[in-house]
Image (tube, rainbow, N blue to C red; front, top):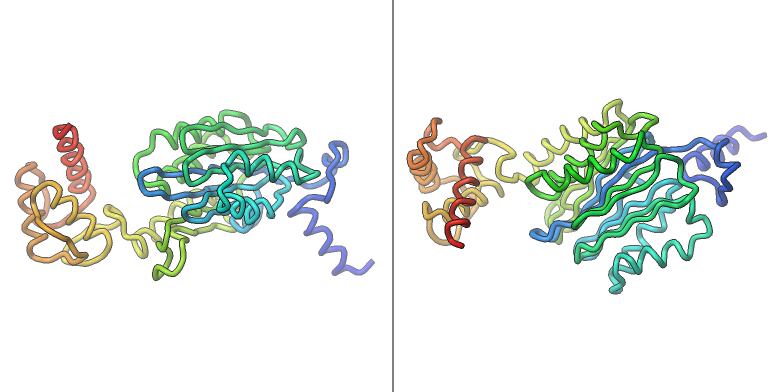
Length: 321
């Protein structure tokens, strides 16, 4: 037999599974375990997917999303047409449930698949075929669905759900926390290899030219979720610059504008705010420190300062009610 032909066929079967997968034959083939979460943030409109697997480059297979449309995770002998096809149907106005029903109705191997869909209204659904390898299943909550196969048990997806619901922050923070919780609960029974995080937001990609607000991957690593967290921190500091991603002092960036808008909402600044940490900003920071009796270095903005700033805004909102 031609060696190149044999290797090509072997790799194809490992990645995608056979065209038809009867239960008896499936036990003799290499299998891949995966856990993922799809979710929606009603405040920002962000949609996203986070995934981990004992699989090389899972980010190239499982996560699919489009800003203002929806997000999809397709896994377990993944039918990758579910991604683009599902987003196309969502964009035409079908609900998450209608899209899922249509996808699996058109797939003769649906019982080997696992898929989750969230639409731009935050409606979530997931499906686990009867031939997925145990433990396999999923849960749903408000604005999210968590699912997996070949896991150590149901506690993995339950832990993911609890972490998503209790973690504060943006959608990316919640998705990463869910992955970490799933792994801490045992995760994939076969081990770890790759992980990915995809979050979409209209015109929030690099340079504003696309919707890939966050698109980071770890393709092959002994602890891919830890590595994904490290890369996300770098990505946040370098590109997103959310408030709190780095210390601030006499600089500029998206996080500076967020800081100034929060200080304005508390009455320390007035009017429209830009992204420059100027003398006016420094004076506002110093006054806030003095009013809240914060220890620190003058106009330097660190994690303690940001935490107190958020606390003050929360108190103000409660007082305004």
